[in-house]
Length: 267
Image 1 (tube, helix red, strand yellow):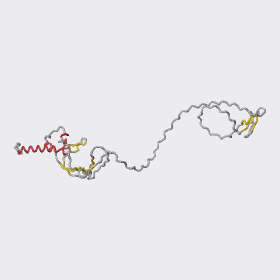
Image 2: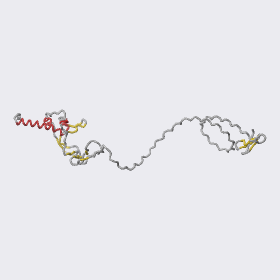
Image 3: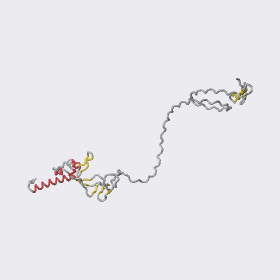
Image 4: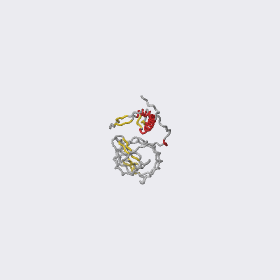
């Protein structure tokens, strides 16, 4: 069919009892007459809906200019609903975002003090200047006890290292001992010891008297204490046993001299 050239918008054209109108872009049917009486035309049969084409994945094109709306045509019959399409595969998860590093908030006010709980630890500091420190004692092993101190008969002078007690005893019952032997040649051992005076190496430079632990270790090693493999100190109270046997040996010699059992040398 040949439509008029260069039509204007809303121009109409009739051909074979069918009226066409130009909407500015294309010609469209406005109405169709009957054979003689101008009766209503019969609605054509709705064509079968075509199969859904494969969804394209092309780049979205630029949106065109909105065209002029055409005249609303007659609604066709509702087509048959198509089958549900297959669900697509799950997309790949995105990368983990960077962890934030926010600033530490201001510390809140201290809460009310709770009741005293069990605690077997204490915080100690190195004290070398106080002259009156008192050891802390408890009445038995275990937690939740009240610590006590004695200020009159037990104290420690941190500036000199002096421990002061009213009386100091050592366990010495036979029930604690095995392999009991009388010391022999106690006098010979005592005669090998050297009593000395000395100034202790400290800020106080206190002059003292005593024995040299390294020398005693070669004569009476069982009264020496060690720090690892190094000679450290002397247990002076245990030296008493050797002194006792030495006095007994001297007493026996004196008795022999008095009784004439030993002839005094003229040398």
